[in-house]
Length: 141
Ligand SMILES: CC(C)(COP(=O)(O)OP(=O)(O)OC[C@H]1O[C@@H](n2cnc3c(N)ncnc32)[C@H](O)[C@@H]1OP(=O)(O)O)[C@@H](O)C(=O)NCCC(=O)NCCS
Image 1 (tube, protein in one colour):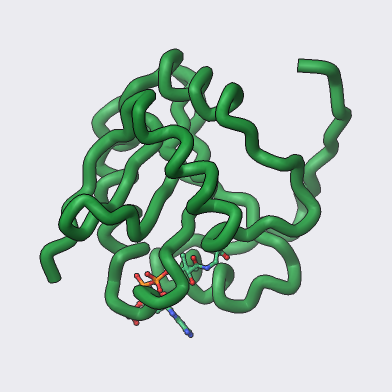
Image 2 (cartoon, rainbow, N blue to C red):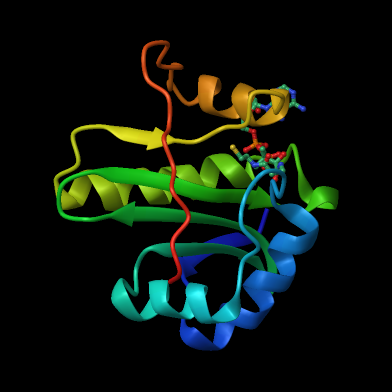
């Protein structure tokens, strides 16, 4: 496999947003915008990790670090490239970054019905917290 990982730059943002529309877990979440993803890349240029095969985008993950907690978002692999270990490669890169920054724990949000997503996190050593739920409040951003 000739897949490599690297952080996204601003020029990658439109392609990433288009990629998520076909490859991401898109239920029950706000629609992504190029402006929002661009803000992420500007604020933390190493957070959005891409997997590329010959410059073709085949996977993504956001390895977010706020100085205190580490969160993984937007793990997605091109449908026709799944099962090749690309998510594993992205999660290796994400984990390296976050551990290097001092993270003591990684977390990820997974939809209840997303069996495949849950299988990946489980395979990577994540366990579901039973006693915590997420509380959200939409605000104008
Ligand atoms: C979930 C997703 C990112 C997995 O990507 P992938 O590149 O196919 O995953 P990998 O090939 O790296 O597999 C990693 C591990 O996950 C598990 N796994 C992967 N595909 C699986 C499948 N079809 N069934 C069961 N387990 C599976 C395996 O344990 C695998 O490790 P192994 O091959 O060493 O056994 C991909 O299916 C995807 O983009 N899904 C849509 C978006 C999504 O749901 N993302 C997760 C949000 S929480």
